[in-house]
Image 1 (tube, rainbow, N blue to C red):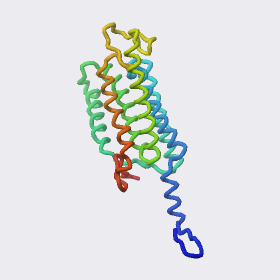
Image 2: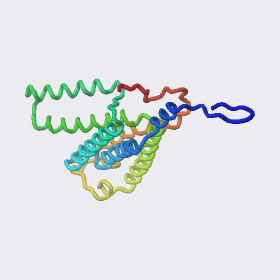
Image 3: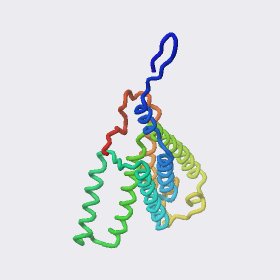
Length: 224
């Protein structure tokens, strides 16, 4: 944009405008981000997604998110996968699981295959998070949703502890009577682990203005 004493001349090229539009999240981007938040929150509220019904729902949700991501690539008419240092160890560990199954070196083959499906769902969730929570607007929205959920969930856990009837959500009886319920978990250590993951999110969001330039927790490296 150039200014003179007589007029204002916009020198922004069509290429620059196109790049700006490309950096803005579209409808499918928002669907993926909101779907990812919903899936993660469901996993927490569904007792950690350990029961058969919740495990199946989590896996189905992960598959739907992957299909949405594929649809986004088809609409954009190009396949764009960003580099992420987490991909390599995740793929190597998955290769180890497949090797165990192929060589029949597992102690219990059925359980290994069952857990493999869960690992695939977790891998899809990691992939969607790494690919879709990249743009500034989507990062901020993701942090706001998960940070708000963490605050509400923490208050709920405290209220439930002070006014507990021995049931999760005051209606669901745990399988073990000696369980120490906290939040939607039958083990307070699991709740503590969740809080360790959720607590840094509002801190990163509140200190985001301290980051200068383009550096941040999600560096933009693209492989097209």
